Amino acid sequence: MIETINLWIQDHQDLVYILIFTYCVSKSSILPVFVGILVASESLLLVPSLTAMIAGGFAGDMLRFGLGRRYGDVIVAKMPKSFAGWMGKTMRLFEHYGVAYILLCRYPNTIRMIGMLPVGMSSMSLIRFLPLSTLSLLLWVGIYVALGYSLGASMSELLEHNLMLLGPVLLLVFVAVGWLALRRIDKLEERALKATE
Image (cartoon, rainbow, N blue to C red):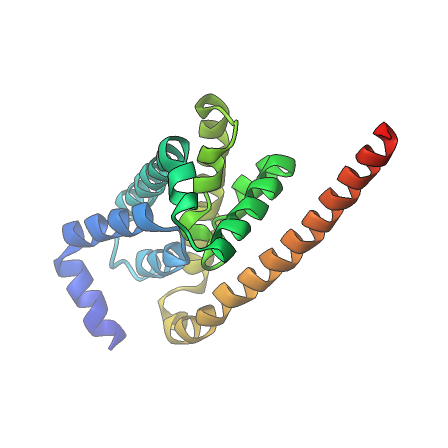
């Protein structure tokens, strides 16, 4: 099956690069790992693959940042209360841990699709956001493509099975770290309130 996919990809490379770009606009995920595997097996070329992923990720970040900046409050107002509450907590996390949030929000499953929306809703300027987003994007593509390339085409079946577990594990880690960070923020706010009394 893998050989059939490789042959199809080799025959339709331009379409594949467009699909990679489009997918990276819509979300950040483990796609670069598979691209790294395909580059290692010489089904895809490295430079066009990297260009498609970086351009797509950048366009997606700018789109979500812009939507958050312009329509963030309207979007949150139309969400169910539980999701709106979660978005409020995400905003608090971002306000306290902005740089770390931007660098890490690409990795956990579910978070990565809307991760930059709260950044657009925040007070962070576009000028400050651009280099952080670019660094996050380059790290994401670089780490995952290098991982895929090092594993190579011979490991694709094993990788396909095991990487499905990586997304939920990263989500649990992100939720646990977020919960701990929110508790710390609450304690700091309590101390500040007591100090003013």
